[in-house]
Image (cartoon, rainbow, N blue to C red; front, side):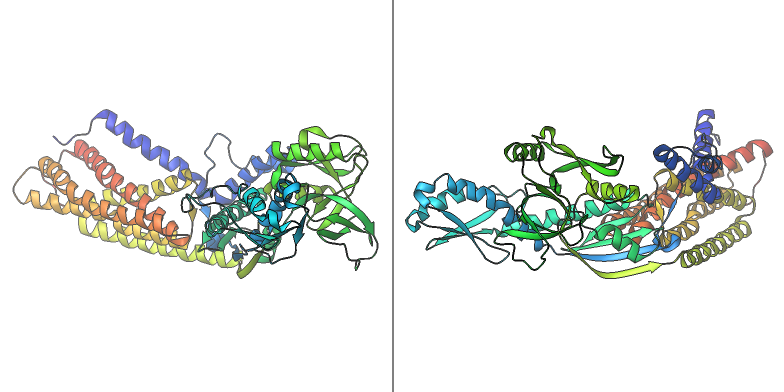
Length: 553
């Protein structure tokens, strides 16, 4: 019998209604976008008359999710950055020096005095005064090695230790360098993502390309130079013991020491030890605040390891100054008045509220582990993005109109049912894209246009099958029922193969290819749903109302 049960009809209409409701905000894009921005600002900064007015542009009880516009549609900035992964090796070896020094000092009666020698960036050289104790020294240093934490470095240690004469050389192993490169890239990608997310941009694309490159695309940002300024700032916070201060910037600071300019005192330079007591890597939180005099400041908090180091140092150096260094400039150099347990403190300096807020953002995001050079930069203006939207809209309208005319001319009333389902198909597609927060790009629009063309394929198969069944002198009800049943396998097979291709494109592709794959895959799902269920529901409802003795397809 040609019929659909009541509960199935409720489910079909319910899914259609849900999809169209989620797609509706895209028809009022500017208003909904202003509403969403106002809600986010009210949660962070509080309500104002202007924000309340913007919030009232769209009802709170309605869905407010939108299909995000990609870089080529909204405009924005594109950067291709190369990470100098080799810079991390020197920092890693430099950080090992205190541990090596303390371990060898514990065996001073066997190895004598210890002194670090100047060397290249990939080697840590340590000289001992008793060369006959080289065997013991090598044993001590090799005991500091740890296993490499990576899938490819299983069974390897992180350092290679060798000795010649009275000098010990320490290098990172090949497995550790490879693992360090991977960690550096992952950390760089994550820090860039956090920095970009902090400023509230929409749907940025930040992904690794190759061994040492990162692709950064941020829609809605003013220019590539603005994006470079945001992500290129190091924001490396360190705490160093102060050796002295001077007004002569050309003074030789001495071995393993640095001469850094004061941020608050023009013409004043601090001489500090090169190895910091605590670094920004051990920072877990930073928030803008005010000091006891009401001036803008930044409060910070260390993790347990950093808190222990900070507490031990302040307990052992009461009365001595220590320098708070940000990006090779001394913010302040207070004198330690007492033991500071808990690993928290406050940074004061000559900066305003906006500067303290930006500093807190950068410190929370963390320091980039290595320097970056920008190989490619491009700014896409919003006018070009609007041109792309207009071109995509024209392409969709032309494709839509051509399909509607063809289906009506070929199948008459049944073609009208297919056209109605096609309209709902596009609405459901935008509803799904809005629900998952997808980003629409020019290739994504191409996927929508392709979906419009493919959406009626299933209806063509069904209607042609109904024609074949009518030629065998079956009644209209039986012909329609057999048409849907016998065309189902061909519809499923054809769409499954295309869906598999879209999955492969999504997994193996990147950027625009993924955008095309998402719209194509979701379009296949909505097309199959509307062809098998929605169009059939229209036909059944029409048949129940008219009860025709004969039909023409």
